[in-house]
Length: 119
Image 1 (cartoon, rainbow, N blue to C red):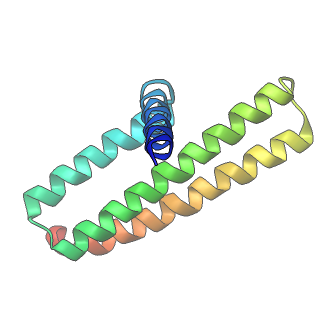
Image 2 (cartoon, one colour):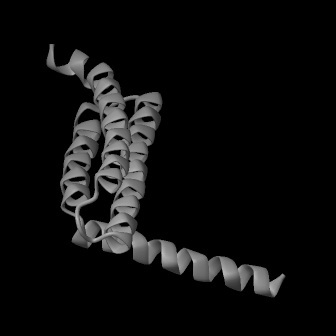
């Protein structure tokens, strides 16, 4: 049991390091966290409902999670094949497309949450 707990704590340490690396080195994640910080401020300002907080948090987590996976795919692809390669480009484009789907979903959710306050 002790080894299990120690292993989980080490995993958590690596995960927190990964979050820190993403926020401090990846420009897309920097932009997204900045925008999401403003959206959180809006949530407090407009005193949105508990359900809206849940939806907003899930949307933001989805975008950051998919963006993180996209970054990992890009880093691995660049490591494996640093020069341009058509098939690597195809893979990277698909990963970026996944981020786009997540962002469009998040924007839709945020429109549903905030449009009543602005209209």
